[in-house]
Length: 95
Image (cartoon, rainbow, N blue to C red; front, side, top):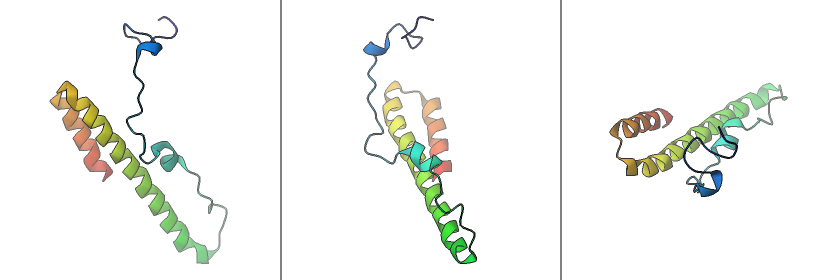
């Protein structure tokens, strides 16, 4: 495969790389953020730590949901009911 192509009959320069998830939660950061409280072992902080983990998981799932919703809107143009149904199932799991 020629360097600089995407496996299609076009080069990277010809592909519209618009970020359709712009102005939404940064899913990668939300799902991979490091927890600053990991090193603390005080019992007093345990409840706060668990709450923090829950909030981070919730933010990660919300980001995934928003991304899927944006992708669904774009893929709807292709009118492939199988793909849309699969995305709908993934969206149900992430809420």
